[in-house]
Image (cartoon, rainbow, N blue to C red; front, top):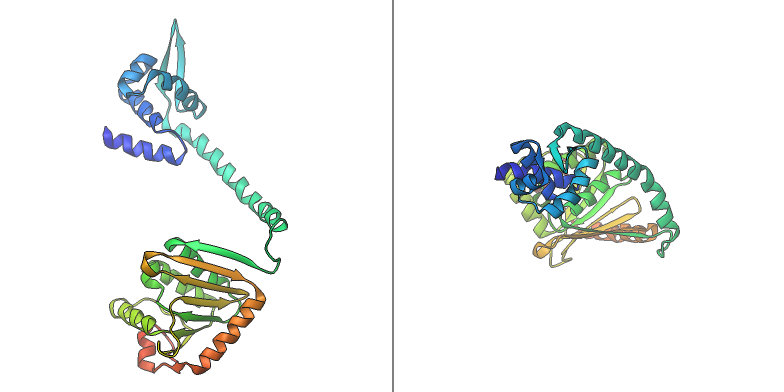
Length: 275
């Protein structure tokens, strides 16, 4: 019965229901309708807690209570009754979605930041994925200075979905890459043959000329930086047209000094149309 309890507890937790509710519900299923004393004995839940928890179980339609002379009998209702609770939560979620835009407008009115500047921080692999997916909103050429390839961090499935979306939108990429990027990219494509960006051109800057120790991406009015050294994944996006303009000028100067990559190496780096 322990496994059954774990399954039910896990599901009820997703509905913000207390773990003892699973214990009580399973006891009612196993032993049938019971008095409070019997339910406490079969479930292991203290009687004083049962009285409080039964209110929640009644409001969520998980139980039915029959009042007999000097005692109450509790019996389990069909688990399908939870559909009522699920429908309520779906409605609450729809309301939250609809109210989000108003909350964003309210916060923007009281922001201490410049109206032309916003800064967004990201942490962890999921944050990194969000930063990459934000790039699919690009309406400009995507310029990048890359320390390490992304697919080894975000996983192959996400990377391929990202590549397909970029190719679907016919996005154009120009990248300046480091010694470490070339090494990690070669290692990746030696083992896997992922889909590749259709419009990717890259140039190489040796570490002794310009050491690259984090990745920078420039698109629209956004400059993003991310780093995942020492197991710490961290990223930041700066939304500011003047900062973006300056970073594009810096990229252009570095691009002129960078070395074109040979056809053979370009194919190893994941380019479908080598430069």
